[in-house]
Length: 183
Image 1 (cartoon, rainbow, N blue to C red):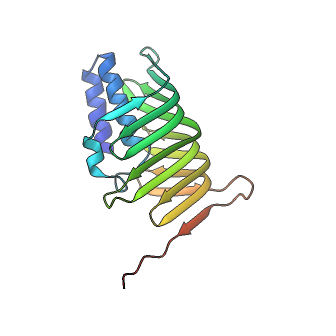
Image 2 (cartoon, rainbow, N blue to C red):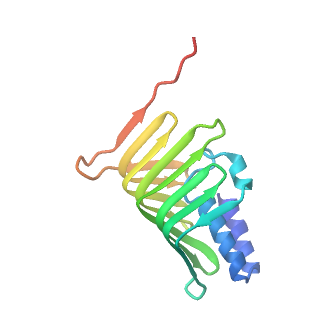
Image 3 (tube, helix red, strand yellow):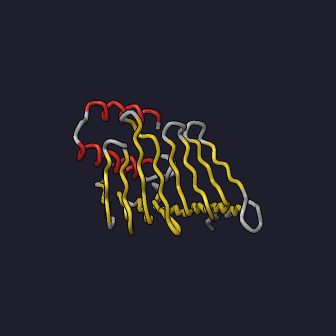
């Protein structure tokens, strides 16, 4: 993930085109917002990124790209649905991506074709700290494990996932499926 960030910073420094920056921002959103590389399908990264929204606005002076209204982002097997997505740049580098929804949903297949799904009211990717936060009735469903919590944080530098309870029970719920056995 650090290598990707370094390449993006270099690319942003040589790119002055608003359209080029917009396309890069969309790529970053698709590539970094949701899934750790170990969980995703490698071939997705080579697929075109498709974005649909009711409205898109880029404020170059503020370094802010905003997509609102039925935001749909897809790349290969990865799909994101949100009410709004805001992408912030600081000093021509990706700073933060915030997706909001009721809830914001995502899904992606891994290399084995197994589906990973998640949702939360808000998802925040902090590029400076390398953290991904799913907040507000957050859930992450993987092929053999489900995690439900008020907050789920993934640190890309340490490859650690942490969860904090909240809501009515104030607890983190984890369900682990036993491995399947072949007869």
